[in-house]
Length: 113
Image (cartoon, rainbow, N blue to C red):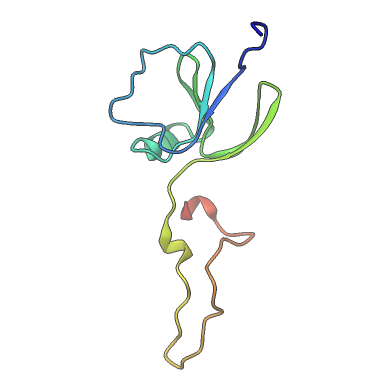
């Protein structure tokens, strides 16, 4: 029906590009997280998010917000595989605990990501 309209569009993945048309004015608000070419610039310039152009909103580096009555958790950025490398055996043949190095409570995540 005509009275049912989208209140928001969510985009995840590589949203930014070298050829973004920032003059386009979407009819529905777009909210995005990013791992594309401009990802780090967006995070550095607007870690808490910002309206990039009319009706196009970068949510920010990480957080929880409410959009059109919906509570949304988000995380922007690129995977740093070296943070998740499996542990190797040391010189004595002892495993360093095995598994992956996952972030722990109290880690300085801003420095890692």
